[in-house]
Length: 350
Image (tube, rainbow, N blue to C red; front, side, top):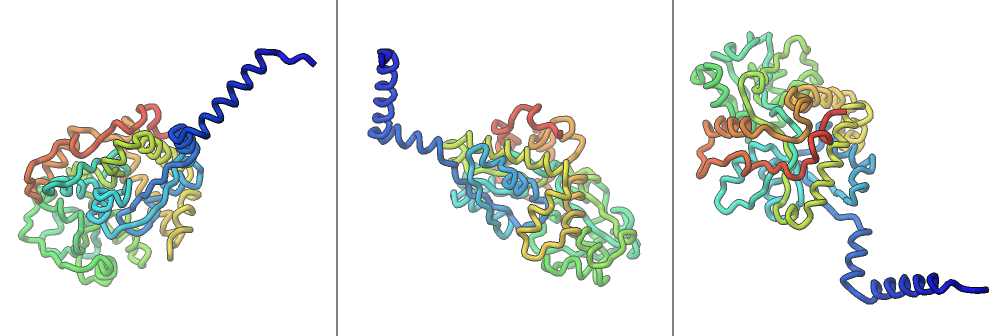
């Protein structure tokens, strides 16, 4: 049988390239990196609830692995702790309140942690009150008792809410308590209203038997609050070393979020199965509330998921400044980096 010389030469060349790859550590390592998923440690700033469904939908659907990412989840005791983990490099990315990020960045020698994707286009801050206590609008808080939990993030924007809406703050009494008893105290009638997150307190109160018709949810966003809500932040060293991994994570999250919007009943199961004592019907109501009130806003429908309006973020920083004295007031570009987002066509709700 006659062998084609060209075939022999090609075979020898292929064999030599293969041997070179085996013998050369740099080539061998590059090949291994290409085949191996990049490990990502991701922190949530609080225990699981259904608002986190898009992350687990992305994982279950193989969207992270499709971008060669292996994502492990953990949770911290609040946004400050989660930001600390990301700042130190103990976590690569985290979901935190962007307003807490703004305060964090004002610390001396704070690492340049930035948000790369905004999940909540509107902050969930709200005052949840009972109509049976005579509260139907913000002006009705005059002379009332409002329960405030320790380290409550919504209370930090109370000064801006007061100024924007002409509330006489001296006529409102505050009752300090732990977050664990916030809803029980309101349902028992020990206070007239509580501050908190609309998708947590309001849904929890209905679950405790308080009639929906007796609840009024006074959302800060409906009363002039410009704040964005929860956002994904990244460790600056990780972002610089592995920008494609960050882009892949954001791309997968957008896919998970779109799938959650299309089928919340299926998405909620991905979270409830991971919760210690999650109640499916309660978490489904919570997820639908989050999507309607905080995620699928007119701004998002126009401009796509994950991005910010720099002018709006600057106004939100001004509102924060009514409670927080900045060492150096940041601008929007200090807080948010949109370079990891896909073009708007890849971020539209579908």
